[in-house]
Amino acid sequence: MITRRRNRPGQCETDLRFESQKEIRVLPKIARYRLPFKSIVENPLKDTLDSELNVDNCESWFPLIQMHTTLKGSRDVSQNNDYFCMSAVKNSIAEYKSKSEIEIWHLQPTNNAFLKSILRLVKHVHNLSKAFLILYFVSNYAPDGADQVEASYECYKFVMTNEKLIVDPKCQEQLKKIKRNYPVIKTQHLLHVYGLNDDDLIKLVEYPSELIHRLYHHEIILKGGKLDINTLVKEIAELHDIKEEKIQFKLLQMWLSFSLDVASSDNTLPDETLYEDQNIVGTVGVEDMSTVAENV
Image (tube, rainbow, N blue to C red; front, top):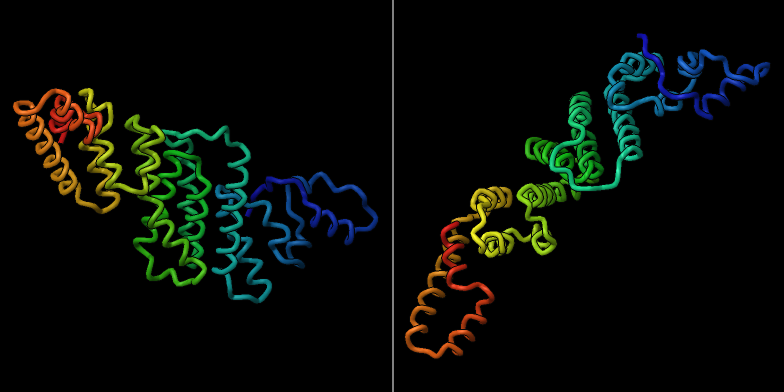
């Protein structure tokens, strides 16, 4: 195999070189490009290779990992592969975070290639619990917005397919979290996409039924805005596995009841009393109720 190293020799490698060749005090130039053969053969491979790995080059090091495992008389090639895949992901996440700009919510993915590299590497991981932890790790550190939504979805999808095979006790809490968190993160992203990311709505992303109620009473809808609120509500309901028709039906009942009460009161009560009754329901007027009802 021919693979050029990407990092300068670390302290461990430098110490090993100077210890084995006491007559030198300066590393040869070739050390900048090539890993030390003696160190690879005689020492644990992770001492030399750990810092070299990232998600883009990890696959190219598999032949060396297999050769070293065989040389040491071990049969745990798959276990070693899994270890180095995890190291590659951790290194790449650390690099990615160091280059990240100020955190903002991205409506579009900023780096699809990175997630694709992760998914390609995960296919080489034999232990499903470790594969899940890699995807969970990536979903937690992806940039806010579309990147995090896509990473969380890939992790969520992996869990839905393999949950019964992910038996490591250390993973059980994370399994619950990703199943709970993905719908919430996706809901938050939808609010940003539709331009409804004001704080009052964002606070309700974990309470989808209440969020849907609030969306139908949002000022944009009350003012007759052209926002496709039904499509948004449908997406939120599907994410959280709730029946939006039931919520919509209750809202229609409330609005119709209010409209009938107001119409009846208009013929029998003074203006002051009617005004007080309207305040019980809130600031939503009869015309506003009609506008909202048209959107359901």
